[in-house]
Image (cartoon, rainbow, N blue to C red):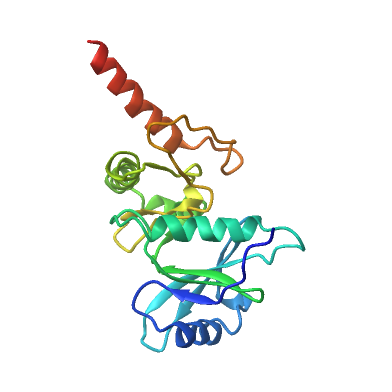
Length: 220
């Protein structure tokens, strides 16, 4: 059964229809000149609104006939990001789910992904040990919040350098929750392997580590 079609939805400070029109105009209908990143589920665009606010817009690829995995990813990310708030987790401002355009609108983080920085020799040289340690701490705080401070817990399942975004001060934010999993409390949780090729999501290992530590403490 195909999911019910619905229009633009906003989550934060923006007016729905006006917000949609501003996004289309700011990106010139998602012209490649505004594209700042490409991924398996969609491309990311930089948009400057009339209010001078900068936002990042992830436009999801149009699904083929009968294929609704893209829509499922959008709804999953929206559900999770509207229920959690943390300084090391990217903020979601709004989203649109429509047959013509499906996109999510986030806060804009100036330095982009950790992957893009590490892939650039000049930018990578700026990552001294204090900055690298700060990035690791930020990701760890974000994961710890999802695993231990949220009920039910959330496992990201795709922690990679492409999904760690940095602001101007090199503070890290976890992004891209399309494949994240909400765990059922007091129940067995099974999930298929998910994530970026070449990575085994550290989020899963961190959750396992917390659990193992807890079991060990109980046995002492």
